[in-house]
Image (cartoon, rainbow, N blue to C red):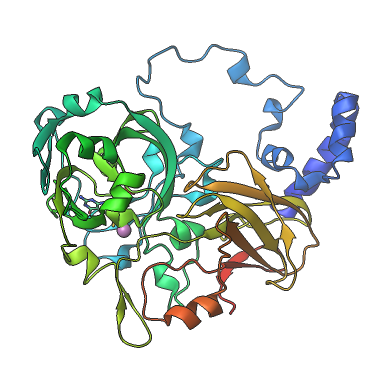
Amino acid sequence: MSDKPAGQRRDLKALLAQEAGKLPQPERRAFLANGLTLAGGAMLGSATSAAAANLPPEVPPWTRSVGRGVVTVPYGMPSRYEQDIVRRTVPWLTASAISSISFTPLHRLKGIITPNGLVFERYHGGVPEIDPAEHRLMVHGLVDRPLIFTMDDLMRFPSVSVIRFIECPANGGMEWRGAQMEALQFTHGMLSCCEWTGVPLATLLQEVGVSAEAKWLLAEGADGSGMSRSIPLEKALDDSIVVYAQNGEMLRPEQGYPLRLLNPGWEGNTSVKWLRRLELGDAAWYHREETSKYTDLMPDGRARKFSWVQETNSVITFPCPENGLKQAGKYEIEGLAWSGRGRIKRVDVSVDGGVSWRSARVKGLILPKALTRFGLEWDWDGGPALLQSRAVDETGYVQPTLAQLREARGVESIYHKNAIHTWRVAEGGGVTNVQIE
Ligand SMILES: Nc1nc2c(c(=O)[nH]1)N[C@H]1C(S)=C(S)[C@@H](COP(=O)(O)O)O[C@H]1N2
Ligand SMILES: [Mo]
């Protein structure tokens, strides 16, 4: 999008008028037929910063010489012009970087896959450096044959690959009591979606033979925090996966190299990284991460426990505080929707704070428990607007309003804030984060 002052845009307009005769006619007709007027076009907007000598019909220097050769960069990195697209953290959120969180730059991503280097990170005891040759997974407890697997052992089992989101249930948690984060990266960035490859947990459980009394499973990490969660056996047998690869390559250290558990659609916390131990038992363990943490204090003073599923949620990724509007005209409002219960069925978008709604186009892959992208064409009149998205999943669950969520859960929760989110577009195109009930 254009981020140039109006003066420069006028220069562009003049330049284009001058160049118009040189443009191939069919392209020009299509361009105008789309109804996009000058600065509405991102291509035109970005052209304003270019030196005249590099603009068509001139031939720029990089076209008049050869570029760098193969394996100058053995492991490829994004263009240096994309260097600002990085994970970011909120320094005041946690006392130390060892037990902290970084956020995915959702405002700059396309499609539904999060590139490995931009997947949000959450650690309770830092990232351990584990040699896969020395890593073991022990499966024991109420089983017929306790076993210890090497990484090589695990890779001999038939594998599966699935595209699934992982979301920390604390995503947006700063906003329960009204705190406003002025960036999409910080309101919703504890969210990622990757293709994960590994062995279904059911396969490993078959290998060890689960005892009839077993009802729960404890998953424990090999990191310094020794993080652990109790998982009901039904989930473990349903769709949990012991994962070793992510988007086609081995897991990143930040994501649990060499092995993590993936519980699709559930609190990110249950997807234990650096997985070293699975214990079968007849009851939940009630460890720290399911008692003092990852429970929700309700208005009656009691705590909701084992609130595993990440319920239907959505957010508009363009425009957003980081990506404002510059000039009245046509745009595509875009966003992401997801549900821990299955597929997204529909996404409605409002530009008037929920008074009226239109159905957005759901774009690309529509997979269960995966990010799903939506878009809606919008002719912005240049005036104030309140943008909202409301997702519905295949179970019929409708994303609640903030008022409905507060009504049901009070304001003491940290986790599971999946309310309809509002971006306020001001006259002039600046976007801010607002809460409307
Ligand atoms: N062993 C271990 N597993 C862990 C954690 C951890 O600190 N240690 N953090 C959990 C939390 S709270 C979340 S939200 C997810 C985050 O996964 P990611 O860092 O791959 O995005 O990992 C979970 N698994
Ligand atoms: Mo988390």
